[in-house]
Image (cartoon, rainbow, N blue to C red):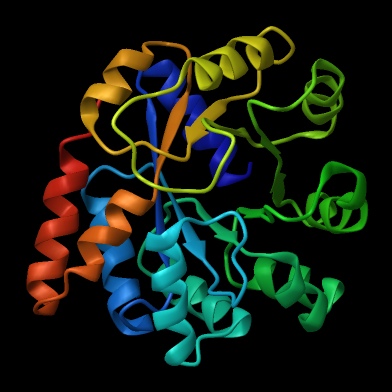
Length: 261
């Protein structure tokens, strides 16, 4: 069984909400990212997304854009991120996902990407700029390899689009809380809550809410409306503060510990 499926199964049995942590791979460097991921796993993360840096991250706000730019200066590539996943897998069984824009996958080659993702111990892939209508081949190839292609839905998604997406989806559905880019926010929008409700009426797949989760109070306010939350920009900000490696690890670990639920 895919680790994503088994993790959500365990969370449901324990009546707990999942915490999916996002980090930009290679910020501040790949060696530190590896240690950060292991620290996050130790501190309560249910899954980790490894963000592949890209020069035109259209779905990301300024915090993750800046992290992506720093990682690109370090010459971090898709292949290096997949190699990083393979190193992490030697020390941890936490579900790992890669979040990447499609251009790096296209340049790398779809078949080669799927083979490398499988060999690296990945469990899922998120490609935010590849719409449902164009995700056929990558999604099919990943499914055949036992990996999940994670679809996104936004508050602007029509009822028919939600229905088509849940029919194609596996693993979990990434529900975007706002019609905008990533970034920490102080509250969960009514539109985000409505999206969760509309999607839940059509599927039993786990729903994960992202784009804006920054404090435990938001998670508690969700109740049972979402199966997991995705924390990205708030974590990336803590990494951006810098300091010694020990200080960074302590900072992200203490922050994520607050979300245990």
